[in-house]
Amino acid sequence: MFNSIRGIITEKLADGIRLLDGGLEWDIAVPAIDIGQLPPAGEPGRVFTWLYHREDQMKLFGFAGERRRTTFLELLKVEGIGPRGALKIMGGISQEQLEQALDAGDLARLEAVPGLGKKTAQKMILALKGKLAREPAPSQPAGPWGELVEALAEMGYDKRTAAEAVARAEEALDPGITGADREKFLFREAIVYLSGQ
Image (cartoon, rainbow, N blue to C red; front, side, top):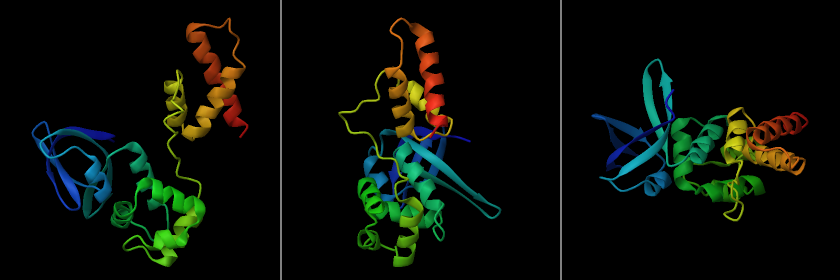
């Protein structure tokens, strides 16, 4: 399945965008906040996508970044939230505010999101508290082993935990190990650490 689509944003709508890619124009449902984060109409842009497919319906959903798409997919795991509901929730609260409200169990803040009732907000807190990974602060760059962390994340490990595992492995690194052997050592040691979690 495709991960993202690059092309020219031809139109921004209230509930999505249209994006032209190689002669094919995509109609993509996008949260309102993400629409504002994407380049203006007429400019090239990249949208991270997810395809909703049922016997009687197909709909393409898009997001300004992978983190936003991950949040959408996590919301779909909550009982009573479908794709359109998740899109509406994400359009009514910023990523940071959503993460803070879930982590703090702030029911009142979640209920303030248009279309989000008390019961669904409670289910969200129960299902997602502490599960939406926050981006590292700007003062904490990915470092020289960013690709290694990404590889571990692709294997299913939480990105923050993977970064911690690589950092721990680096502490045990023999200065005499160089080149590709360094990366192999770090990868192996990080896996050992992650397996023990």
